[in-house]
Length: 426
Ligand code: SPD
Image: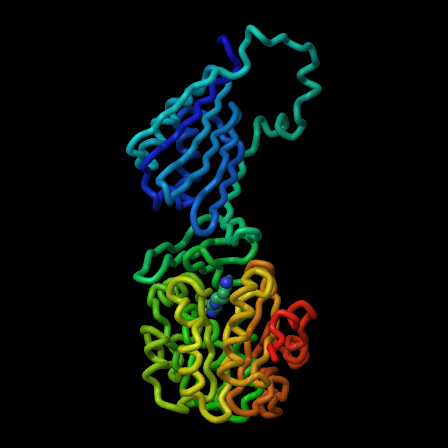
């Protein structure tokens, strides 16, 4: 042996972009490529970056395999580094070329640690052994796969144990991950929508704030909300006559029913009228003053959710609200989506009036920055903090995890930086 290791630096071109954006597929392929070459895997860490790209490393007893992908160019750069005589990195190269469906690949091999240039240092090797691994008869294999949602400067990562659902619908990519910390998690186009463990914050706060302040709600419209969590909360109020929910993407409902059953718990409720259609079209065609409360449980303002963030749409929502109607929308994060957050409040004030639009904040650990906002806009004079006694009396029977009368009041108290961001322009 004339060198300690062999390092192959690989370029794979014209690969399948879908594969290069699939963190689970990449991780499996990299591990299989290591095994195929008879390497012993110790650990692996892989991250998906929203919207595109995967980075990862498989640490092997004989060194490592590393990758970064650019799905938008069908390109992957890969490092295959092995030490000793037992593992042939070219076996991994051939395996990965097929696994990524690369049209062509190129590679250069470097010899690392030329023996002719090395001198052996004397030390007691037994003293340097890690006690735990010698007790267990070898290294333990672990794995780390991460989902990451990010903008240019901020990221949120959750470690997961693979994907339970993955469909490219007509509108967006619908996925459910099995996360370690937050249970099953629904994502749309790589953005976190809800998780089993903290969903109640969002769903209780979008629902109970307006339901507790409206004097006598009978008809509620939910735009979006395909996971079913908002409907579940709203349907706790037995005085309602009808809850219409308009979700554009039936795959969201399908995935949620199968993998988020505690959230999608009320789809069979007799008062729920579920429509799979475009929420914008539904609102445009709905009769004047036909709803007491409209909840916009939308995605972020990209993809199918984009049209829900326009003055035209909210003007229509205002039209279909009864005289004392209330609109509540998810209004993004003051820190993660600063521009759109500010625009939302400007836009609503133009439609509902300066005094009638209010912001309230919640803590959602699985949304980037953890700080999320809702808007409360009143067509009449339903004050956001004036809770109805009759509605409040129902709360103990609802078994809520986040909402309570004190949280309701406190949520409208805004930190100075948020007040400044959205103070009405005079
Ligand atoms: N980035 C998350 C924006 C909120 C999306 N809506 C969540 C749907 C929960 N029903």
